[in-house]
Image (cartoon, rainbow, N blue to C red; front, side):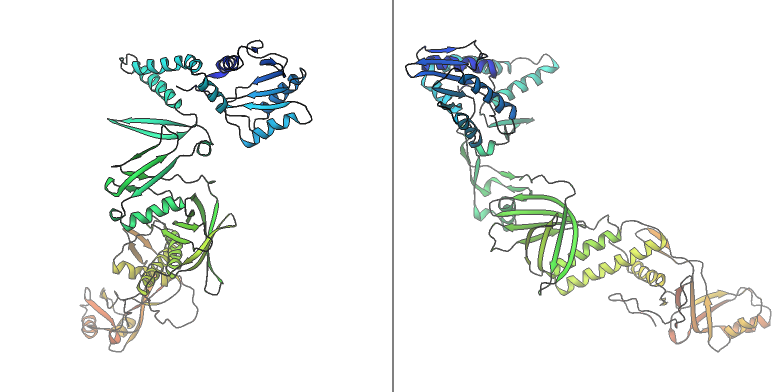
Length: 558
């Protein structure tokens, strides 16, 4: 069992190093004051060549430039040691030095006639390997502690805190397996799940772990291959599952205790996206074939990723999720994927999503910017047929109509994505009326009135055989959509040539004083329909000519 340098602590580190130096220099190494003296000497060795001073610093994670206090302490120890005119000064640390740290140590000897060296973790491990009996002496307690923890797992959990204590002790043992990596673990029934975790920020650089996945090509369908390419090739944080029959083997390369090749294994791949600042501005820009800007849509960044083939950018633009895949090979074209959901969105929000979708259907050149800087670009082929575009345009018109009516009525709710044909027609008519248009109203083919028995010249004119102009003003025009009602206000129904189906009979009843309760059917001439317009619409002095509804598949009435 190797010495766990990261966990033994300063006193034990000093004791281990002092014993090793004593063995290496045949008893000539002398520890000063046990843990180091005020004169810059922790351990000294005298020989015919002169004085050799060892300075012990227990810094398991080194002394990077960010730890100025550590570097300052090393410099001070070195200056004090130089008062004794040593021929060599050695820094002893339980870590592997970075290039910056080694450069720092080497520069200590500038303008001084002294040799400066480092005894790092590798040198310490090698020294104890040469003196294996000495290593066994120091690691015996570690082995006893591990054995004791193992034995305790078989004891009763008498107290509520026993389980926590034992799991924590087992975790400490797991942390001691490797200085760079450890296992986190959870239990779910009879299943124990192990998760490999780096014990410090540079674990993947100091001790890389590589996975080599060999799939059975014939057992992996095209959709899974595409998902693997996005996840492994571009770092998209998308879960990919490979069943055991689709995996030839999985090899893990890294520390010796971790390296293995397994078969008959399923793989679930969940890449972790790089953390981005919340709300980072993102924008997608489209260009025509001549390079002119054709559209810009702003949104926010969701995630960035990186894989073996290129990098990825994910953004939310007006509710649509965009994935931009940018190859490292600048000669290769980037690609753009997108998905969206209109459910639960207001008409205005849904229109923004659909306009972007229509632009994507058309294809063309695109560029993605993050905080004003280009993050990727490419060209996307058009994928929308004429029917696809027409369907989007029809839905856009529906949402636009609903948006106008909602704002007019000050009644706001998510846009229903399904409606009946009659609801759609009424919504279109309401929008046109709000905009001051006049519409031929299909439901008003006739109007039936009930006489109260009172005679009047104007009534007799309407009941006569000559067409008359007639206007009727209901108090409101209410439409229903998705179970919700909206009233746009009072309207006028009118026609310039109205005749009464049973007008002559009604006139005879008036003369005889028997007209009360008689129903009269008033019908526009030539089979036309009544016109309708909003009572509050401004008068532009133009003829009230019916506007076509412009709905696909709908024939406007006369």
